[in-house]
Amino acid sequence: MPAAGLDPDERIIIRPRRRVGLPILLVAGLVVLAGASVAAWLALAGPRPIPIDTKTEAQIDATQPCSIEVSRFAADPAIVVIDFPNLTIQGLMLDRVAALIEKAHLPRDRVLDDVALYEAIYDCGDTIESYYYGHDYKAADLARFFRLAVQDKIKLNPEELWLRRLLVQLNWLTPGASGALITLPGAAPPITQEMRAVILHHELSHGAFYTTPGYAAYAAAFWSSLTQIDRDAFTNFLGREGYDTNNTNLMLNETQAYLIFTRDPLFFKASLVNMTDPQLDTLRAGYIANMPKFWLTPMANAKLPVGPPQAACPMN
Image (cartoon, rainbow, N blue to C red; front, side, top):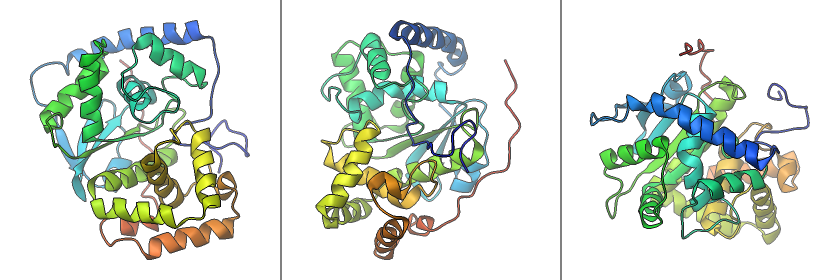
């Protein structure tokens, strides 16, 4: 079923359909949102440790966060999940990270300042909310982001500084640190409870890719086994969604996540990679049949544990 407000032929990818607007309005809106967020973060800015729970996929799905919630994934504690109340706070915290690590046509050796970031968001027709619906990064890439931000003298916003505080607490900014950070937004418009479940399922597969070397090797071998036509089809699809197609590791990581763990036509379907449904089903079945046996394997065919409708968060 199409998401609310979408035509039947439209879809929503982890990064949604592009929107357009005036650059000056985008910049002004972002500045206002960033300023408005400062008060919300004052309570989190102190020296007390950030609470970190442990949750299963079903428990996260059943949550409606009214403030940021952090948890370790029960099946693999090296995966840390940040659950946001909405897309705005998620975007303020992680859009600049996305620009450095995996967005197309942006520098990989420097962090964008506010003006350059807002221009990049506008140039691809997005807003801070729509730049990504969910994020996933390994600890080493996050450490590189903050190292470059210091080197480039970038003034980070309060949300990004809070993220740095979390990473210090996790000991992820030290050389050799390992782990995976994944994020998702709460079920607040335009995100539904069902969409939230799809996003989490997708992002958990990225977490496995970062923390389980055997699975990363399997995904790489699968990518190599594809025909050039199929690799090109997935690469072209991912390029249309704004990913850096020059990053082969990113291409194969996103391919496993969309092909196996994103079974909703609002997000992904066969026609997007020039296949028929039977062709895509055959590709999926072959991938799943030979997957390494670990916690992610049952999730390849599992029904999403969509949580019950949650009460709206109280207004401040």
